[in-house]
Image 1 (cartoon, rainbow, N blue to C red):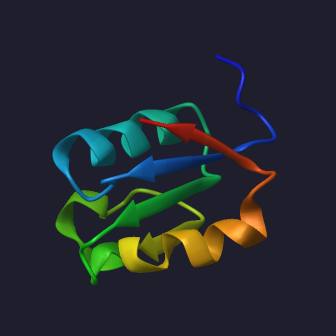
Image 2 (cartoon, helix red, strand yellow):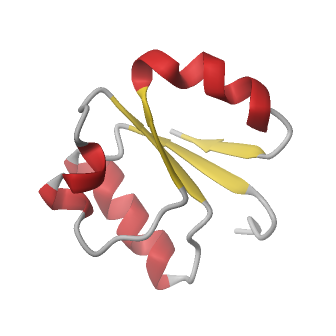
Length: 77
């Protein structure tokens, strides 16, 4: 998997699968991750504790934020 130099967007990053994907990426020293979720306190969510990511976006702001990053995102899921 070649993803260096790309941002990874994870939808549902506060859930079981999304948070484990963040963990696996962190184990590969990948931290340029955008988490999108509907949980408004996601940076403080227990499943994201001790995980590193560059941005958290609430799902309602996804499209507004994407216009700033549209050429840098490699979407997973």
